[in-house]
Length: 368
Ligand code: IPM
Ligand code: MG
Image 1 (cartoon, protein in one colour):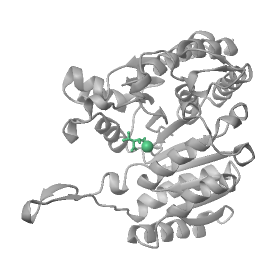
Image 2 (cartoon, protein in one colour):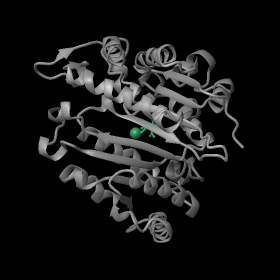
Image 3 (tube, helix red, strand yellow):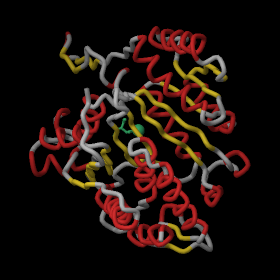
Image 4 (tube, helix red, strand yellow):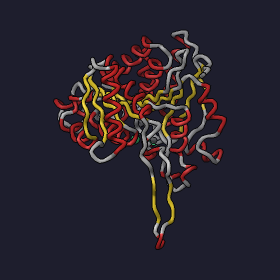
């Protein structure tokens, strides 16, 4: 059974722009502590390349156990060209994958919402994306990311063979499909399940298991199946046909990046990775912005903290049972965008450019 200490939040800023954006989240948490009499206990530590530099590993056991004991982990980003040539087990990304796998965070929620203030920032025509609100539910602890056997092995005549295994069990498929169906009921009641059942046995199983769960428990939810390649095409052809999309780890990685771009603003998109609820309703969770570490702009104070701030809002909603506070924070972000404040990534004509910390401060001023 998971026993969690109350309201402990672990911040793992990580690499690149991670530390700058997470430091704005910290300001927001401190604001909530001071003004809304919440008692979040904040701890902060190293992860990814920055942990490797200091400790020779992308995540130490100590940090890993801190994550286990926290009610929510908020991560900035990991990775950068500096660590590209490290041996596989030392790469910054391994820290993230270890956290996902060991904390059993099997459901990755990635909303792709086109903010009305930013309709023109999308590369797609405004009428295609205005009002867009898709929720990806990506399976996060299975599939080809973790399947065995894996590795690079020598074979005959000096050649080598790279192996990964795409593998899913019935229960892994059903538990993530359940999350998708439950969330759809709170939205537009429609789930699209994506796989490659035309070429992969694991895709065929995926489709069958989603179907059988639907038959048994979720007949009130509209369910469609779509081949993942077709989904990639439909996302740019007519993205508003989707409500909730449930898919495996690898397809979810790719399709959610594609969908993020529809919104015109990678800098605004948060994500939540959730585990199973225990008897007491406690659940492990990790929140992170969808954007990566963006090493090219790190340290310049121009990165957009909104995706991280909205990730904290998801933490308020999904882990900390503070829906009202989450609404409050989401509204503050909307107001700042209404005022025309923009970080460089979402800047357009007539808008006012602000730095990372000015954006954080502006959001706090709307909370007042
Ligand atoms: C993501 C990222 C990660 C993934 C990397 C950084 C390991 O691309 O969260 O989408 O592939 O899952
Ligand atoms: Mg990705």
